[in-house]
Image 1: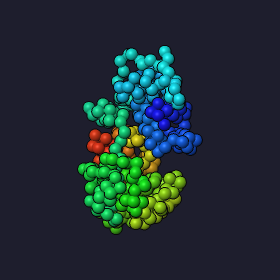
Image 2: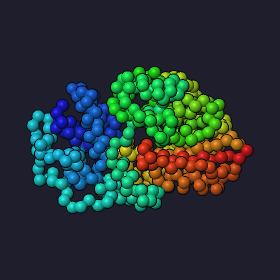
Image 3: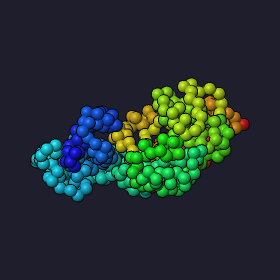
Image 4: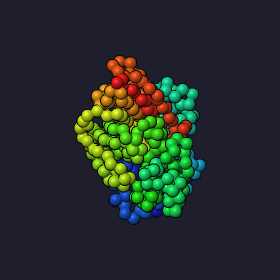
Length: 383
């Protein structure tokens, strides 16, 4: 495909996403319907779509319109390219420019320039203070790809070497001793022998840092109460923990047995958790604001009403999970959120109002630290 044809494909996909269809599924459907597109074409189109979703407000301003065509026009203009050289209508290129395709000449308001919903700016400023604008600028760009080295299968140095043999260059990151940032050929990771043989797993460095901060995992009986795909469960099992995974949506855990087998660990999957545990980890559903570089649609789908629902759900999950902590045990409350409303505003009152609960150490990580935004707090239960 030509560069212009890739832009036209992105326009068509974005129009469907803007109409309410999930981005990942729309990209998959497009690829299945257009078998002629090679892997490089699909990767480029995917990048165009997600770049446009991350920068939806500023690209619409540059594009002069809010549909898929407008966002792609903004993408091209933001890169410093004259869209008339690509929007030619020749072959599979987008149709030529018209009067409706002119950029907005007004100065960009702050929320537009930062690609943030206006109502969220005060919430973020309350939580992040002077770092707000710098963080939002980072969120306009693609997130790094990180791997977790499975120390049961290889040392960090061995994993780096094995990946390099397959053309995948990595470098350590200070967030976690097991974390590697992929520098080149990130899309080769899943097909690499290092991955298929369980030497590495895809996991954000901040997520790894949350687990790395937990002492005494070796031999501990742990309940991953909101396990999802099992990333944290695998990391804790690699540290010697006896892990039970649970999720309110059991379908989200369907890949855990295969991932555990590849990693050489055992994880018990329970749809209804039973008993008491030394440690309960609750990575609760949240706004995902710390990971908007990876899932930008969440930024635009979030509303004040959705936030109210989420904080109510988070408090409920914390109360439910607390029932599975043994006396003398610990609970870890975690989110991939930057917002205090989902973090300290949940844990502080819970610890104050709950018998036998004492609030311990907390972590506040943001994309300025290198990985996703993440919050975690340890809550101790008295013996």
